[in-house]
Every structure is written in C-alpha cells, then in structure tokens.
Image (cartoon, rainbow, N blue to C red; front, side, top):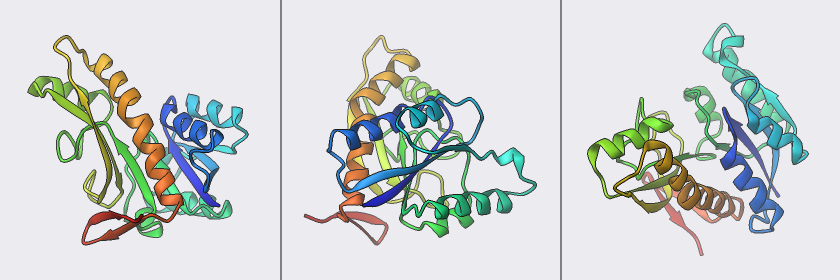
Length: 208
C-alpha cells in the first residue's frame, strides 16, 4: 500500500476527490497517511479530519528560512512513511530541497492544458481569467510531476473542457474542476500507486 501525503491551502475539493476514490475502491493500492495545510483554517483540514486522516498546519511564515521550512515538511512526511506527495490546491512554491527529496514522487494538478496558461503567476482564478481573455474554445486540466521549474514537469494526464461563450472565471473554474481535475487527479494517483508510471527523457510512459 503506497502511503500518500497531500499538501493543501484551501477548500480541499481535490483532496476530497482522492478520499472518495480511495473509499470507493477505485484507488486500491494507496492510502492518505497525512495532510498538511500551508495555513490555519483551511477547510481541507476539516475534510481530512472527517476522513480520519491526520492533518497539520506547517506555514512558511513560521520558519526563519525556506530551508528550515522544507526540512520540517520532509521530516513530517518521513515520520508517516509517505512515498507520494500530492499538491491539491497548494499555494506555496516548493524549492529544490523538497522536490529532490521526493524526485518524481510529487504530482500537481494545474487548471489548464499545459503549456497554455501555466508557469509563475498562473494559479487559481488567474488561469481561467487568462483563458477567457485569450478567447480559447477549449481549456482543461493537467496532472504532472513537479520539478523546480513551475508547471514544467513531465505530464501524466490531461483532460479537455469546452469553454462556453457566457463563461465567467468562476463558472469556468467550477466546470474544469468537475469535468477534469476531480477525474484525472485520482486517476494519476491510481496509476502511480499501481507502479504504472515511468519517467524517461522528461516524458511519462504508462505501463500496462
């Protein structure tokens, strides 16, 4: 059973999608061992509590340096024997120290079809605002491995979502979550926990 650590910052809908898919048996080779929030009061911690999963706040501002902050995160996840890290709406940038400690074992869901509307500054509603400003007819979500370059790691899964003429950023965000994020993030977790993902030449290959 692969032990999973989830990093959150807000409502935790993607965390809930993983919890639900573990509960249903769709993800049968993994379990969430620990949830860490970047801030107090995140509803994601309530979701973790309701599912009987240990939750903790580890905030960057509580540490004098980035190094000490990430050392504490690594120590915490190691204490739970975590093998896979999932970023589920996590709003703190991670540096090389943490990323290298879990090389090719950190996955993130981004609310656009990478390489569109991604990189530094593209997060949350800003992604959907940019998509609507550009007038794209199709957007979606991407699950990828995390590297030191923002949103540039090997792509695991993508799913397209149509853009409607009367969309607002909020409406589009909700549709992308419902039709793409909540589907491909659990699928990526399932594939990883079943040992079916391999990274070669900055590309992800799926084993049968």
